[in-house]
Length: 553
Image (tube, rainbow, N blue to C red; front, side, top):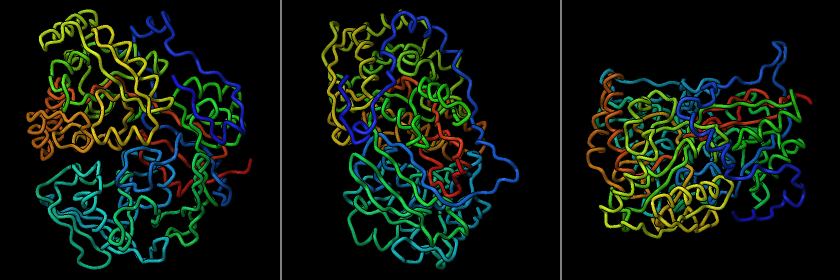
């Protein structure tokens, strides 16, 4: 693996903590045998740190947090990396959002309340008054209309990764300045959930109309204002003193430090220079706990983050379903969890592991690539390659995004591919270049760490797996999957819908628009003085920090 580039923080801090060596040999192999059924248990809703009943929120202080890289740009609607959303989310509001303390509940943000018509085809939102954008313009219904029209039907040159979930919208109407109506083509049980995604931030209409994109501008209505971005060092936000929620925010500001190396980030957290950090490995959280004890809190969830392999079906041999299936069958998923996540993960399909829509394990283990007898699957994979015209395998490249989350994944996959005669070479690129090539479909194979915002089949499939999904980077099209998607999307009965989702899942997992390697457990560690923060299972929700405050040390 490459050496991480030296950042500002690497010059300030030394790295006293060594990461365990990648590929841990026989101990790892032994561990992998039990991972189908013995994944670590974690609460779906982590408990927020408690506070004495008489303790009241305190204003003041700056929350220092971590991000791994500079955002490629500031246009939230066009992006799909947390490196954009995390440092910028506090600058914005949503129409509705997930309750910060209960991710199963949706509450108003810019909407005070809403109504759904008896036929399920009209959603009427009544908006807050007295809200101002950071550049001084009053917030109105026209801003909601402009943003969701941009997301659903982006203008030329604008990428909208999540537009698929809003194709059900027939029209958006604004009867007055503080009422907005979403008129649907048909009932859609997922609409409210998808509106609540953290990506659907609200920009002012005048700026959306006056510039081609929002890549260089950060203007919202949120609790914090954008102050400064020093590339390779930090992103700084300051309190919005005219915020529309009385008494909020409590914090004076937030400062995200850009630290590519996980050892350096862990050292910064343990030293107290970071108050909040999101380590990939449980061992890092445990090390912090060992040194700091009750001074810190660990929040862990079965997350919505998953390791994948994209295969470019615009090129041979990946346009052959047999070749893609052979690769899926070659991958030892329990071993991947042991090697890449120190056992902290779950084998799963396209819907989130542990979620309400996941394919039952006994059904999943019947799907090629997921069957327990891996030796038998590897032999079958070799036969599939021979049938496709590659009896001796072939050479390929792995487009590899530089970083601690991506390079180990590619190294592991290179080893797995060798079992079926596929000789893979790593093509390591900086984040911006890797994203650009992924979006242009300029790759053979692209291992990638993806995350979803909500546990909802409309959101997941419309973003990743349908024929025209914006993030179907493999360009794999299975018409049967699209047909099943349409059926489940308009099915109101939850049990009937679940059966259709499972049928869709089984067909899609053979088509392999992506290969899912594993679903990760995720964790956030923070100093105990950070109050009123609760980790959401998704990497993309609950990052506005409106209600977070810092207790005195």
